[in-house]
Image (cartoon, rainbow, N blue to C red; front, side, top):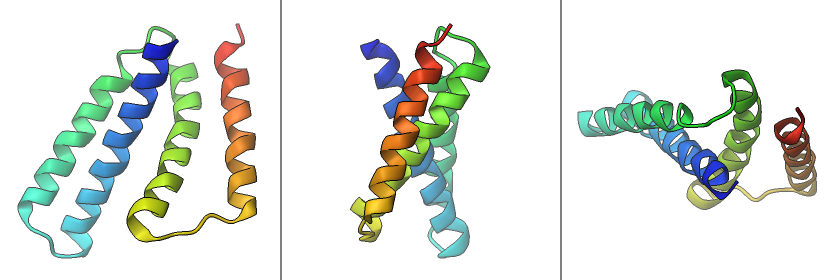
Length: 105
């Protein structure tokens, strides 16, 4: 179970940071290195996501929740976004949903 959680977390960090770097390359005129590093991280995300032992559909339904939670953390850490009560509540609700989906047969 620890391996599964670690795969989800690391994959989401790769995806969010890769998308952010490509966003910076395209929208903020950052150098080519940003785009290349972003692309590398997105390929890494794809590889990490493929390392799960359960089926594709279940992994990606649950991963969507991990991605949303990681995105919320990214916004707080790197963009100064302050989560509101509704953000926290929504995060808890989707996390509970992910656990139900993942552990169900």
